[in-house]
Amino acid sequence: MATTRSTARTHWVALRAMLVLTLLLGIGYTFAVTAIGQLALPAQANGSLLRSTDGEVVGSRLIGQSFTDAAGEPLPEWFQSRPSAAGDGYDGGASSGSNLGPENTDLVTAIAERKARAAELDGVEEADVPADAVTASASGLDPHISPEYARQQVDRVAAARGLDEAEVAALVESRIQARDLGYLGEPTVDVLQLNLALAELRG
Image (tube, rainbow, N blue to C red; front, side):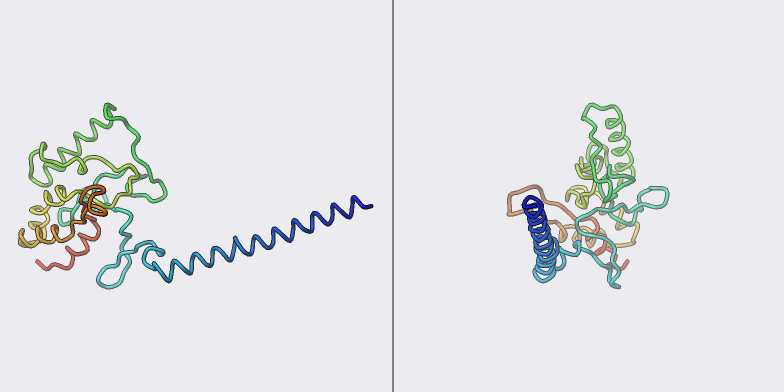
C-alpha cells in the first residue's frame, strides 16, 4: 500500500514538473524570444525580406535566386547569380553543394560549359570569367557574387536595357558590400538587391 502511494506521488510530481517546464520553456520561452526578435530585430526575425517598389515581397537578402527564363536561359537584362546546386537551383529546402571534388569529370565538364556560356553571354574571354560565375557555393543559396563578376555583366545589362554603361557601372560600385569588420571574407554584391536597384533605372 505504501509502495503504491509512493509510486503515485512520484508520478504526480513528475507530471507537475512536466507541465510547469512545458509552460515555461515550451511556451513562455518561445513567446519571449519571438517578442524580443520582433521588437529588436524585426527585419531579420521575419526573414530579411526584400520588396519591390510597389511593396510586393520578391525574395530575401539571405537567399539567392535565378534570373532565367522558363527554359533556364539567362535573361540578358538582369545581373546573373552564380550557379546553384540546391535542388533545381536556390531551393531553400534542398540546401547543399555538389560535393564533387576538383578532379571529378562531371564537375570539370560543367565548369567548362558554364565558362563558355558566361564568356559568350557577356562578350569576354573565357580566361577572364571569375570563378564564382562557374561554381556553386557550399550551401547553394549564396545570394552574392564577386564585384568582378558584377562588373563583367555591366555592358550586357546596359545594352539590353538601353541604359548608359557608366550609369550601370556606378550602380554596381554603389552596391559593393565591404569585408565584414573590415577584414573578414571578400567584398560581395547581393544580386537581388542590385537587380531591384536596376529596375528603378529608366532606359
